[in-house]
Image 1 (cartoon, helix red, strand yellow):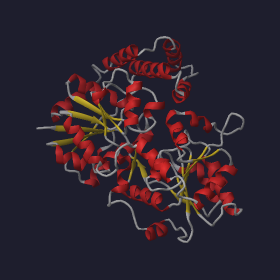
Image 2: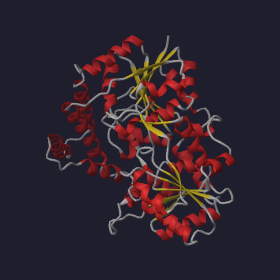
Image 3: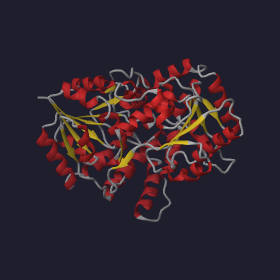
Length: 464
């Protein structure tokens, strides 16, 4: 008997691994599949999966655990900040001026780790972090669950959330093999340390494998497997999507006009989005766009769309796509992680990308989504140190974004004039950057979308 445990950590993991074909493919290869869910069990009920769903107790991180985790993460950032702007920027963001115990401890960690930050020390902090779980009631329950279900391989669909660390510890104590999927294209090149150590790592591409081996010197090359990502697999699954006529009818768009899609980040990552939207809306009213267009806005699923309320009132011709993600649980240390997408929203997203003519966003992964449909992409970055806007131009120096800029696959707009010019050029010559886009997709995603779930399931089976 070969039993696979799958840890679903959040709403995006739910979309990527539950709403794709991954579970179906895994059930076909393993004797049994058990989903260990950091989301409430009820979010799976209507999907009728022929496998066991185990809802995990919410882990609340005590101070001792937090301290060693913070030491591990800050040390990782210190170690790699000198030659990586994204990590250096993230290091600054981790500093705290708070006068509470965690704020004071953070400042101590910063001073200490400025000099003591080797890979060996990072591994030592991780070991001490894991030891804090030894007698934790939640950890003991996790161990019991893994024993009860006789898991042979535990697969984590995200490597970073701190609340999965006790589950990693439980698997280590029971000598269960673990594998982690590297969640997003920017996680290695600009984010902090993983929640723990794993036996195997599944990555998007050869580029991501190189990044992993660079930032994690203790990881052996043979433990890293390139599999692509299920994040984009729904775009090639027939059960998702709608006809072009249905798309225009649903969103009440004028079918005679091309559609400019603006996809938002959340307020913490893309606070200038309202300005970018208003710039496009004003250009439409003043006939600065070379042809009549629809303007469709898809807000971020990570937040409520209330910050755009004034825009919706002032520009009634804007069409809004508010992602259908429901808050499954409010009491959680990362409440945004508990937002769950509907099946219909995956269909809506696929159709929005498929039938829009150009995508505008602030350096989002939605750039890759749009390129998969051969759509031109414009990245907006108006903010700099000399104006009063949030300084989003600094992201151009992040390693994963520099690869996008250097690829010449997108148009970068640093001013209203550049934004309107880029939209006009994209509408007139949508094919101009198709070759560059394909090269970037091959670099970042690394494997075909078709068969992604089957490839991941087979790779996991081969680990046993």
